[in-house]
Length: 65
Image (cartoon, rainbow, N blue to C red):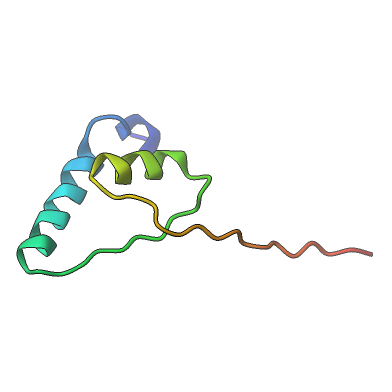
């Protein structure tokens, strides 16, 4: 079974929600870092209550002749 076949079944949301609840009960803060173009991850994190508070562009080095 491929990874994409598992997407959309709520597995990630359930797992992340369990971790978030566990950390919250312990009084701990959670911060995530994700590529801004990773729309699937952003949708999951926002569905679990995370909100963006900082954004940063990364640079890619291109070799030139």
